[in-house]
Structures are given as structure tokens and as C-alpha cells.
Image (cartoon, rainbow, N blue to C red; front, side, top):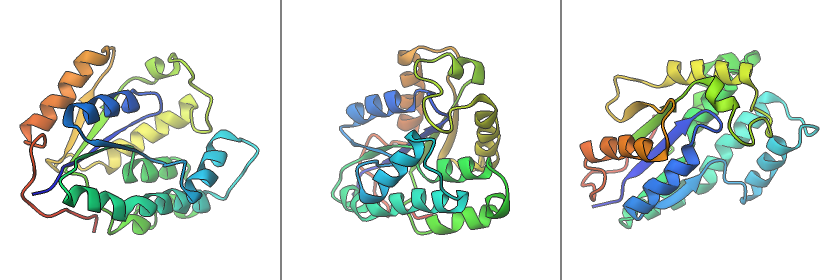
Length: 209
């Protein structure tokens, strides 16, 4: 028996972190945020995201985000196998969607972008929060980081919806437009309960292949 691995994805300021914190508490799970800005690689990523004068080639930035996920991969699996559930704020889908939105060179190749993440633990459930760009841009703090621009976020949203396999029962699109925190939490919890992910899991950890 092991813990469940649940991922919350979405655009910047869509409420991912708030809901991830609530879900982690309900499940007595650990919360993991990507990028993890406290690791050696995460500190470079943090500067890249917050200092607009610090520039990197798009390919380098993409590989850094993937390397940051690999920094924690072993720990994630150890926790799951110990019976601890984990809720993640962002993961590989964000990495691919944001890079695809940049376009140019390898940024147009899904296979190239996906390649570095092959072998990482795959979530038992991915919850993508969908919301209008107008509502996002009105939220406090919007625009403070590199990618928080309306036109770019529009491209990111399109890329997310293109790469998420909606035939996969482990992926759910959750419309949170205009909803306060509590109804969103109820929607997410319903998805978790319907898959019995609030209980120990009797199957091996899946991996991206």
C-alpha cells in the first residue's frame, strides 16, 4: 500500500497553491511546489523568474525546470512508498506548456520538451484549473513574474489543453471561473473521492514513459 500522488496545474494566479494547501491538509499529505526554489537548481530558477535582467536561452530554462523535478524525484517515490500522500503545485505539464508557448527551435518539438521528464513519477490524478484570463489578470500580484503577461498566458492555456490527454481518466479539467475558494475545493475533493485517492493505493507507482 502506498500514498497517492495528486497534481494541481493551471495558469499563474489561478488558485493552484491555495487549493493544493487545502487538499494536502485534508489528505494529511505533503505539499510539494514546483519549481522548488530552495534546491541548488531551484535558486537559479528563482532568479530567472523574478529578475527580468537575468536571461537564459529558452532551451536552458526548460532543462533547468526538468532538472529541478529530478532533484526531488527519489524523495517523492520514497514518501509515496512509505504510505505518505503528496499534493503537487505544478509539474511536467507546466514545463512543457510554458516552453511550447515560447515557440522557436526545440520549443516547437513536444518530443524534445517531453524527453527530459521521461521516467519521473506520474500523478495518480492531475487537476487542471481552468479560468478566464480576464479574471486572472485582476488578481493581486499579477504581472510580478516573468510569465505573467496576458498574451503569453493565453498561449500557455492553449498549450495546456493540447498536451493534456483528456481520454486519460487520471486527468480532470476543472472549471473554477468566478468561484470562491470553498466551491473549488468541493469540486477537487469530488474528483479525489471518485478515484478513492483519499485511501491507500494498492498498485505500483506509474512513471512517464
